Image (cartoon, rainbow, N blue to C red):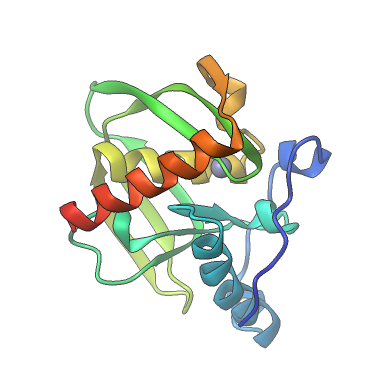
Length: 179
Ligand code: ZN
């Protein structure tokens, strides 16, 4: 496994939609290795999710860290993911992105969604996600459509490196207490 470099703004490919992945491509050792590398890459950068365009490939694959919801036993791999809102509820919360380091802003998201995707083996996944878990998935699917959270965020601010490190520590503590 290796840690891949993160693609950051202003790289134009971050704003380009990703192409879907068919079963044949998904099964290739190259793509399987790419997915295996996405996981340590996400953790090395203290992310809770990572989309393929953030590691220089515009293909419809993203991962969501198991800390995104307490029922997750392992990190989720979502291939060709789509979602539908299943309630009228929305909520606003702060988001950041590994591709836009230290920039944060408030983003409105659907609170309750139903997700359809394949896993890394090409098996169909269908599940519901709510609140923070739903937020992470919507953020990652946006990446696959060439949309970054900073494109829709309000009240944006940039943290200093010190503030950022302190906030990462704080978030890790919180996640430990809730999982
Ligand atoms: Zn992001």
